[in-house]
Length: 253
Length: 286
Image 1 (spheres, rainbow over the protein chains, first blue to last red):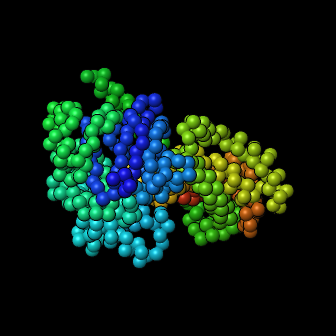
Image 2 (image 1 turned 60 degrees about the vertical axis):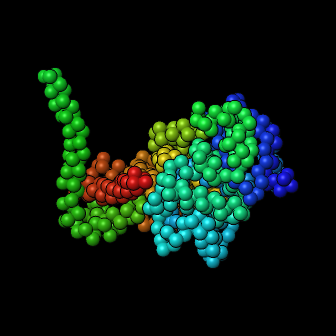
Image 3 (image 1 turned 135 degrees about the horizontal axis):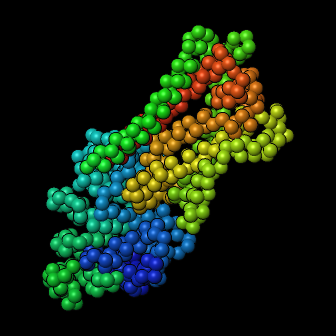
């Protein structure tokens, strides 16, 4: 399996100020899989996700040790072009964060800042992203409208479309359905299933049912440590660690 | 209960008297100034450059042009540097630098205008005269001095507006692979556009109303300026320079100058208020 590992996390620890929020994480992420990360609040799931495309750099007191290898190179190496890394490893936040402009401009923003100027190429990428995020049919006649006019579920799919328009290799989703109704959630999960055919998808979720439904492998994080990582059906039916079992059966968290 | 009522009445009187001073000033200035405009004729008053109070000629066009030219220059300088400071303070500077820079810029607002004028005369005027020509006392010199004076206004308002832009815009743009600068100019400045515009207009109001520093560096000549190196007289300087010995119609004409200034500033403030209210309303809707 290790030949087609997309990302290899090697003894990665993360710190805010001096507090260690991730401890010696080791795992691999493969292309064409959906990896779910579950765990109670404060277990370091989001920090881990944000470490994967260096969004933690924005945090003043962040520091790290260990390596995250992507494309045979440590992403924390000084020579890495961070904006282009973030385009290849795309991120969708828990709360939809539309930019204050039209639907079209939101989706075209990423490709534009990456230097694509051709109008037809942009049109193509916008349509591609919106179709992949199962939003195209709902908005194709109103692309010029402000993105703020969309409903919450549509905004979240637009944020997904915005990342997909960049044609990333890895897709990071940070509780993408936390504020959504069941129908919008189902639509996003459908989109994820389709996406795994071409991307590696990493999904952080507080909803263990969603992890069971919509992932191939599941990792359980607790207090900054990776407790267990195995195939989703195995982890949910026959967890190896008793803490995992306690969590998925709802005894804490 | 009784005490409550007394305090309430007393406070109402205090509040009303503060507002009534505005009303009184407005009424007084207009009462003194309007008749002369009507007597001379609005066309001769506003569109003629002949200001010979002794011969009964009161044309303030050159001064209007002077005021506008100086203000325009000041706002160009103030906008570039003020917005630049605001962007650096909010987006790029490390926190330790912000702690030093922000109070430093705010201190600029506390320096008396006569000090600005003095530094202008002693330092800037000779520099301009030597390297660019002309008498040194000029539109350019006044613009630079005023530009520095409006810097704190523009910077502090712009910083507030930029900080009011939701953090999610920045996070969203960064996650899509935008560099800091792309995020700043394509997303953050765009979202803060109307607030920044309001900051410029408030700065303009300050610049056009400034008197002391301008008198010291503008040269105060009555001629129509032909280049930015020519001296000008502004509306404010005109009032300050001549009020001491003016009487009769001359005095009224100075009040009329005040009316003109008053109206210009009112218009600017109204525009600024409308813009910032509108953008506040838009933000609230989101």
